[in-house]
Length: 157
Figure 1 (cartoon, rainbow, N blue to C red):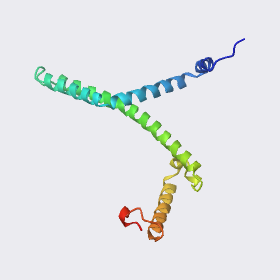
Figure 2: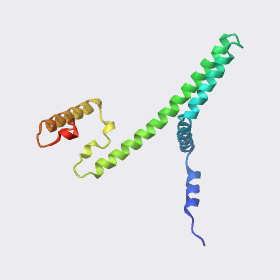
Figure 3: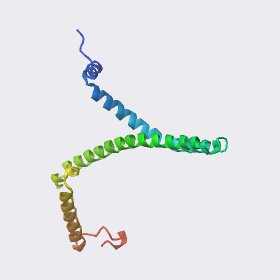
Figure 4: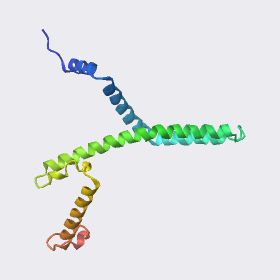
């Protein structure tokens, strides 16, 4: 009797996942690939080419309302869809960055673990923490034993 391979276990797990997870993962992959592709110089050049073709066809269509409506509708649809793609990739990137920073905070011996999940604090708590760091910075700048981060390297003792 042969053992079940990890690939077979993965396929079995994939089949058990609910529809929402499958759609969510498919959108995540689509959004990531789209953001890479649409954020390239080639995509920008393609957009410029489309605009150039639209401008050059203006005299042919006598700059009609329909001619203007085509570009307005096209740009509105593209902008609408791009908002969701950009927001998805930014949310994922921000989440990944927060997790990396949380790991660094957790790993540093003298770091305050209260700073993990800082993004979940209220605005008032964030203002209090910001003021606390402002006081720490002022104290460090007044301390003659610590070089200030505002000094040029040649000014450091």
